[in-house]
Amino acid sequence: MQVFLGKGPERIIIINLQRGDKLLESIREQLAKNGIKNAVVLSAIGSLQRAVFHRVTNMDESPVDEFVTLEKPLELASLQGLVIDGEPHFHMVVSDLSQTYTGHLEEGTTVLYLAEISLAEISGINLKRVKNELNIALLKENSN
Image 1 (cartoon, rainbow, N blue to C red):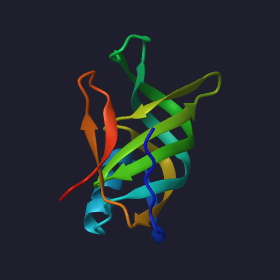
Image 2: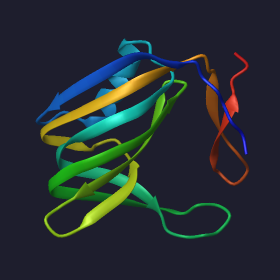
Image 3: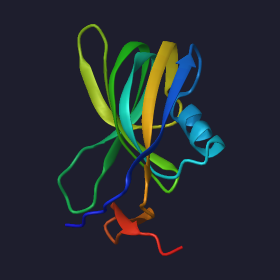
Image 4: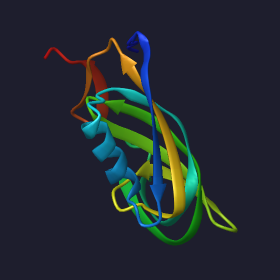
């Protein structure tokens, strides 16, 4: 186990997306534009017309992922995760009228009507993700 302590929220950024906006791509753009390297998702809600995500399919030492694309009206019920060294790692919960889906957010996820995302910038930490020999991305102190 590793634990990393930051100094707390530096800034709060609220991103309001509209029809046709790409969820992950828009978040990345705003992180870069505002110079945010480390953050945590506070909340995210909205509707999607396209959800692209991956999820694990096995319990072996190395993960095997299944990539899923849904194109239909979906509610974005939740988005959770961290931004580390400028790169978002988010998981989402979406649902249609009869089923709920979860997985790791991928590029191409598109807003139907609107999406509201709030992030809290974390100060006082300098982390990066490094893949180990099993292709699992772990958090490490960034010596840069």
